[in-house]
Image (cartoon, rainbow, N blue to C red; front, side, top):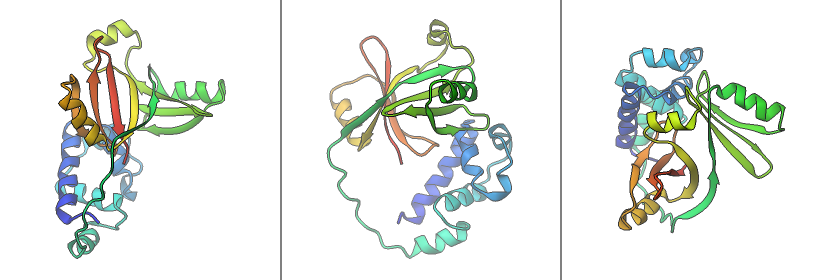
Length: 210
């Protein structure tokens, strides 16, 4: 089990994501029963005191509240982390830019026979669909014209690789003087990722979930 200080850091990080307007915070707050009716926008309009952030962290970890988590974590023995081994590329996922994620998901499900893997946000701002071994991620943008997006957005991810031990892969690329569009970052939705740029300035993401 993680130490209580680790959980405290997670709570402070959650406050930072809330201040930054990260819509993923909505899904975390809705884990608490009394907030399940709120949209992502309403969540960001609420204050995020440390006590609430700690409650979210506790519920996400499987506890009723912060006091219950603290009681267990305080007595948990520290165990060394196992060696995660060498990084291994597992898959690549294309990301499509769409004006309406829900409508796009409906098209792939109803017209093309895809299954819905997940949707993030209320309303949805990110989702995934798959059929057999093929998977697509769908990301909300205000305009889908690629030239306009390239001029307006700082990071257009054109491919995303799921990997194991993303930290080791980041260090490997760093040693090779790879250009990074984003350094190694723990994200609000639970994964850790970094982005690189290829010689044509395409942005490629490498992510470890969980």
